[in-house]
Length: 90
Image 1 (cartoon, rainbow, N blue to C red):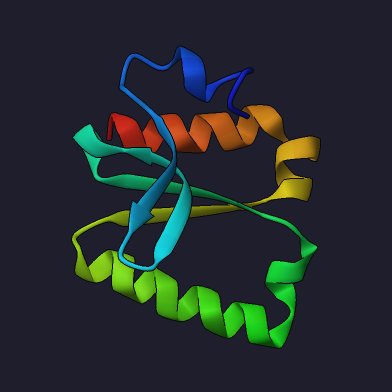
Image 2: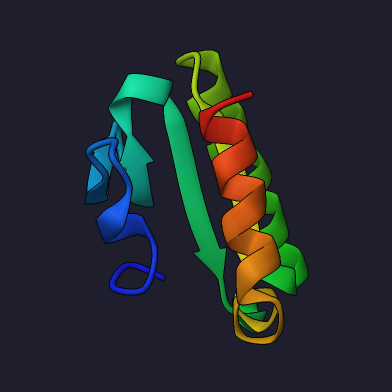
């Protein structure tokens, strides 16, 4: 995702950005946009609960959180990229 898409965006994309006690995968400050890529562990109950609290915290900061399953990135890379683009230029 980074090398094949995010790195080439006209907006500055930061990797591994810290917000409070959380680290997000990717952050686009100019759009207040967080992009998370989730492995299968994110669909277990404990991890889902953690992600809900984390997303709530980030939303309280005025950020938009986009989450994509790793499997979606693998199987539908173009669709995931298009969805991100729509959030960058609504």
